[in-house]
Length: 261
Image (tube, rainbow, N blue to C red; front, top):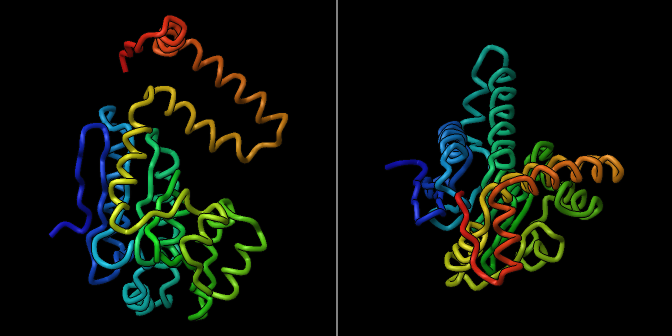
């Protein structure tokens, strides 16, 4: 049984975390499978959008605490293993945002700790009613410092700090209001809603979305003046693309564009 399943439907690829007995924890094996698959998809020009979901009753319960505990048996008490683990996790999360295709989290059940981090890292997220989100490490004495990076870049500081220091769950509707997810849907509609969003994104000009995604994450860390200067140059690059020229011409001529990519 593969720990991560890949399903391709036209230009949309779905990655399904498949360790339901461990609530799809981000084990060493899961992290490796996700990173490898994301690398493969990033280089596949036929894929225009990606959905990440989980089998079983949860989306993802964060790091595998049993593996982490086993790591303590090393002579250094686990220091080298823990450093490597969090570096590998950060690299996988960074890959989600550096790949050209938009990535959508399809969330159900619970998304806790690094699982909540994965939701916050994805470009968009749709959750089923009844889903709970939390960065709960503080409840067992482990502050969710790495999940904090993605969480605090999605929602307001005070709300993020409250979640991090109380270890409390928030409901899907609250997550939507805070900006952690895009919307909440009925559980039975979750898969179709995620696919509909992916299909919409996949229908756009791939080169434009690729340029835009890279620019989005670059400019968001800049001051306003630098961001405008940078994105102005990005717009120039985009305008010089053959398919962009065709798209504008088609709009003006009231016809469908004929894109090469």
